[in-house]
Image (cartoon, rainbow, N blue to C red; front, side, top):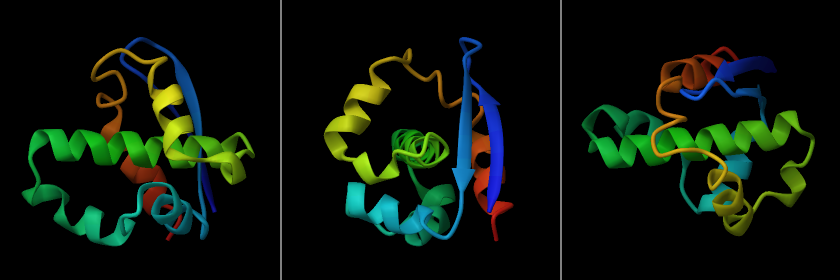
Length: 103
């Protein structure tokens, strides 16, 4: 299990939790395999990379908030609305580092 905090481009702090459940919640909410997405990230477009980091951040944030059982695509859109365009992208490497430290 790995816990960390990131600071967004606007200075907001988001607690993130990565554990064995993360990849399953990612698939449940987004219908995508997190491991496949992570492997393909270097070959993806900037837009695809941004979407991956936002989705991963969301799943890990819901886990840290102990509400991952409520995670859904609609909740993701609602959560994402609180941020400016690209705000979550500045700490993208930190998001991945927290996730990978769980292994």
